[in-house]
Length: 316
Picture (cartoon, rainbow, N blue to C red):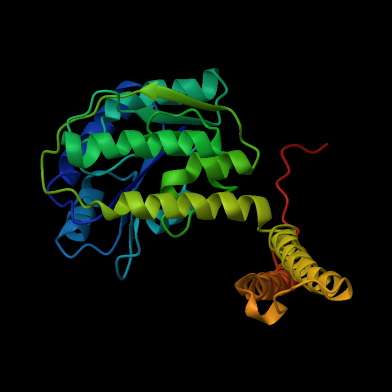
C-alpha cells in the first residue's frame, strides 16, 4: 500500500465528511493505494457516529475509538501501530491541513529519500499575539536545543517513511517532537515543505497557552531522556560527585584555616559560627543524594526489559 493517512481527532464531527471526501479525491486522482485511519480521542460529540457512517461509503477507512480522551500523542501512536502504508502522513481533522499537499509529500519521501518531511505553515491565519508570536519563539527554542532546522515543529501535516513511525514511541505530549525522537533513533534525513494553512471552518481550537509551557517542559524531558535515559549515573553521578567534592573542599578549607590560625596564635572565627560551613555541608549532602539517585537509576535502567533494544537498518 502506498499511503496511510493518520487523522487524530477530538470533537470534529462537522469536518470529517468533507475531509474524507477531499482525501479520497486526491488519492484517486493520483492513483494511490491508500487507507485512512481516524483515531477518535474520546470525543463527546457524534464524531464516532460520523466515522461509522463514512465507513459505509469508503471501504479503505479505518476507525479507532478511545474510551476516554488520552491526548494527541496517544492517538498518533495507535495510528502508527496500525498503519500499513509505505508512507505515513499525519494531518489534523479540522480542515486547516490541505490534503492537496499529499502527493508532493509522498514524492519527497520516495524520490528525495527523506525520512521525514514536515509541513511549514509559512503564512498563518491564527491570531498574532496568542499563537503566531509564541509559536515563533517556541520553534526558535526547539531549533536551538535540538539542532533540527524546522520552522514549524508543531505542524500536524507531516510525512514519514514507514520504518520511522515503527521505530519510535510517542507518549505524553511528545507528538510535538516526533522529528527529535526520530533523529535520536538515527533517522537524520529530515526535510521541510511550505504548506497551505487554511482558516478553521468548524468548531474551535482545542489548544491554549498551556501548550507552550508544557511543550518546553516536554522538550527538556526528551533531550534529557535521549542523552541519559540509558546512563543516568553519567548525569546524576557526575553532578553529585562535583557537588560533594565542592562542599567537602569548602569545609576542609574552613577547618584548615581555623587550625592554621590557631597554631599561629592568630585571631580566628569558630567554624560553626560561619554560614559558609553550613552551606558547604548542604552542598555535600545534596551531592551524596544525587549520586545515590544516579546509582538507583542505573539499577532500574539495567533491569529494564527494553534496555538492549537496538534499531537495525539492514542485515545480510
